[in-house]
Image (tube, rainbow, N blue to C red; front, side):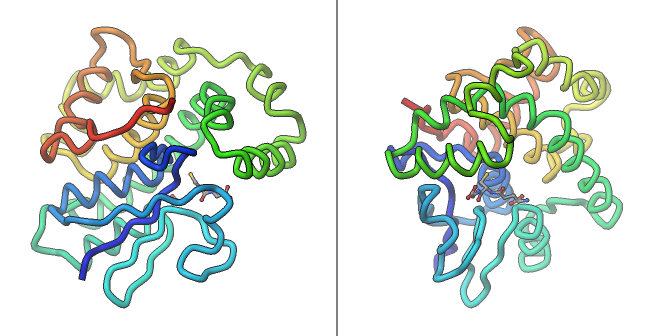
Length: 230
Ligand SMILES: N[C@@H](CCC(=O)N[C@@H](CS)C(=O)NCC(=O)O)C(=O)O
């Protein structure tokens, strides 16, 4: 039975942009697993597969339904042990948790401010309304105020990625000599930015820029099969 990946989309459903969904796209490609993408707009996310309060990515694999990108990667590792590993053992699983938290707390907030208005503008009318209402409640200010609040810039992104830049001078991937799920965690965040900005915004000629291109080109260029937001 075909694996189905429910992922967040813009008004044009070919534009899939969620960082968490991109992590799973790359993890599936790493495992060599074909999947059917099911694009879901914001207002339909909560009720995916007749659920309540869901968030995407959601993966359907036979009788299993898994939510959360990290849980999905752990599931794929267990279910498909003979395909290339996403974690390289228990130590890798533990270190991945750190990479997820680092990416989420240091990289995501910068990108969020960089792309917030473009996300909004790319959505269908009912999703725009939902996005504005839910985010303004969360940030306790308007979308416009939030994106201007600390003027996110490419420089701020380069600063946030400094640990990655430094590490890549001694190894080609976060996973070491070959990529692991941790690479896709950070790749997903930058891809989110790329979908909206038309480019990764990585510093020209940096280690991080080369790494991003290397990861995008893996598995038959899985990371380059994207549609930019209009
Ligand atoms: N920790 C979760 C985060 C999932 C998440 O935040 N998904 C967002 C899309 S990027 C979502 O479903 N949002 C629905 C909403 O805001 O209503 C993961 O890694 O999968």
